Image 1: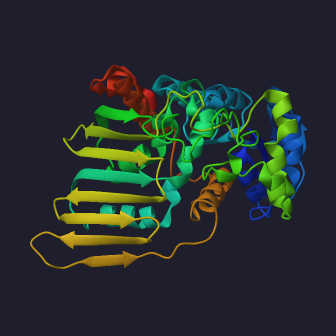
Image 2: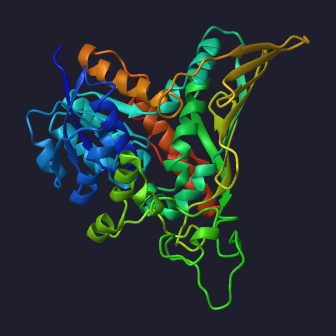
Image 3: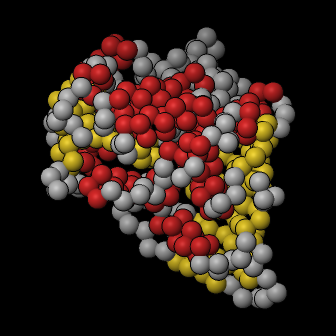
Length: 420
């Protein structure tokens, strides 16, 4: 088959990463045709980072009207995912949409319906399903190695997560809330691991405990105010959380300088977007730590904890099953199984490939292209996207209203669109 002709919609960090991948590692199967972003300066600045050039459209509809583009990847801010996907399917393009599918469960169903009407591929960008440790864990579960799972814990420590409070992700109007923007990854992993059971209700507790004006990581000097951005802050050199974008403008590495230009002063003059707002002073309505509890329709339970104020970056999974106890460590690249009624311990050490997100991004991008070329079923579908968003949306509602929330409050769980 001829190369898949690709467009990227949304030129931020995620978009340029995949544009680079399509233009380099996957160039034998993909031709990058165009980038779409309302900020032309940011798109043009990305070329050195990508290592290739493409047409630039400041109007996404103009790009989607092109007949020489087969597929698009959607990496806009989350609140635009639904609208862009609907327009892309109307234009009969295949779509890889980065998580989340939309910022509401009902929005997810509208996207699924549009994909089916257009008879085009809707590929859900859950790169965690392509992580080699989790793929090995899933195979062991399917083989019946552990018996039936009745409880799961997903724990994420994410040092880089603190920067959410400096960017658009900090506001629910753009992200739906971090239980959707970030948690949809982990809720999907829990749904995927447990298999057929579906989530029915959640409870959630979360807040901004640390990233506020009570916890500056440096002493304030009299009459010297911090912020509002790292590049303008009098404390930039002494703040351990200062954003490196401004300093990177003079870096010797071409890709680093290009990335700095994408989010520098000139690009910001076009749309006002900065990545270096002071994370302690920025307006925000999301959270920097929280715990969510999920109950499934077979009685199984799960919890997900996420911590964005931490020196550690790792994901741990603990599974309780009828056959014993399981632990998985994504950065340690291992799975450990302790059978019941035994002192045995079975350890699986997993080799991790290179590439973004521990090798998961290249595997996901390659599969998207292969699904278009061969018609294979994707590892993650729009249906999977809808269930994970529904949990995240219910978590945001639970946090706001301080109550347990039924999944059916945010998603039509009987919809035929949720049938595979």
